[in-house]
Image 1 (cartoon, one colour):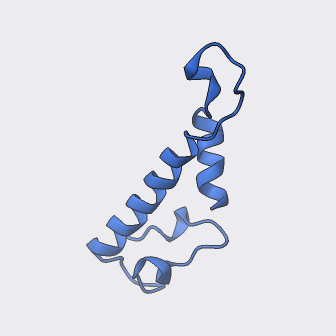
Image 2 (spheres, helix red, strand yellow; image 1 turned 135 degrees about the vertical axis):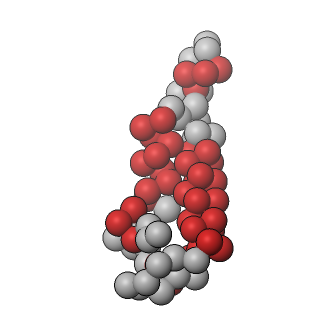
Length: 72
């Protein structure tokens, strides 16, 4: 399995321990998934509107969380 097509411009397979043009090792896949999920969840912690009465609406939702993960 290769996850190269899911990488953004600034990422390379070598960052996760995989070699370009070859199948990814299980460890490289795990690294990619942990990194991607961690940054996405961290994106949810962004304070978007501190004055909202609802705590749910104060923080980033899916779209902004994923944009955060892709930027980093």
